[in-house]
Length: 80
Image 1 (tube, rainbow, N blue to C red):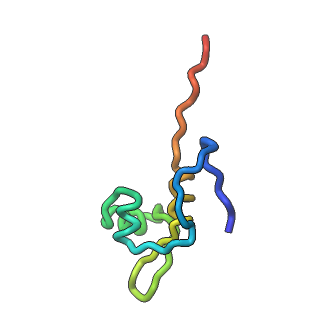
Image 2: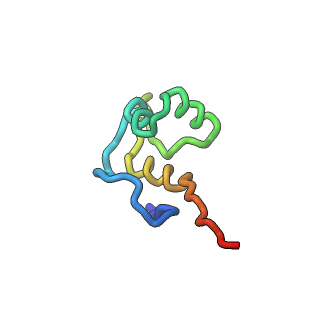
């Protein structure tokens, strides 16, 4: 698995990276509704996931990588 570095050079979240989360836990972690994740899944924009039977599961490390890829860092003010 490729390691993704944060855009701002800072670690975004702490905790065990190998923890597996349910759809509901992942939605709480991302502070969005489960419906939002389902919509992103249909649109091909969801974080990496796998299925355990019919259930969606997310690795915490994959959620963190997905967040880092979308992290927007403010530009330092340029002097004129």
